[in-house]
Length: 282
Image (cartoon, rainbow, N blue to C red; front, side, top):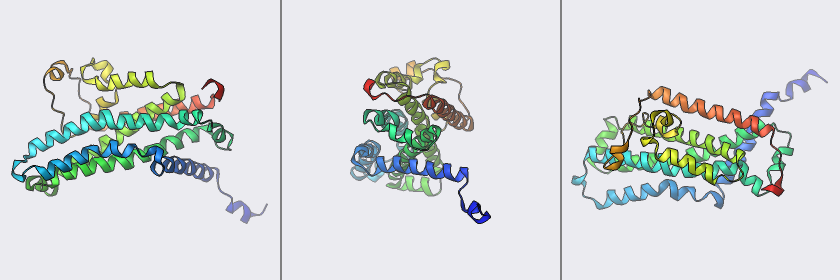
């Protein structure tokens, strides 16, 4: 073999990167450009419609910056971080493996000359790209619409801390996609029926505020709260039952979620190496 031929051959790293990009592209196009992934759009952009109607119907003089900030914080905390991103991750990431088992197509990926760990990473990154593209756009559009339609909000965006708060909300959105995505990817690998485990995770995340601090540390929403610039407004029984745990610094919360997702993916990679496909039992 000549030196010229050797020089033109791709290295192992280049081969792995090309294989990863193929898997990522397959996952992205399968969700963003096909009808089976269209349900994620109304889920993500429903608050934008409500905010737009609110902006058009209410008189400009009726808007107060503090009230708009409280409303938007509630939208992010209670809708996006606890409902929309949760269910979108459940729908997308559990299908990464479980969907292919149901459709009896997973063996094609396992028969390809690709390491199974790379399949796990590619499916996670591909679905994460879809989640980020949709929900980051939705949160940014909601934020700009909420503050951009009245004078005090426009000043808040152009001269105040508005853009900094937007960056914080977008970081919380991204980390929610990472955390929930890792959980549901693993659930799709471990369980044939993911409904019951998913309901357990939903219960923990929904009632994380009333759980003992030790259990709060095991939830994704606990680490998202300090990242958001404005806390949610709690009233009535919710405020009475809320258990205030020791707050986590923003940098530590972000690092904790990334570390958690990395550990989950590492475990999923070990699990997928031992995985045997038996369509007759699924």
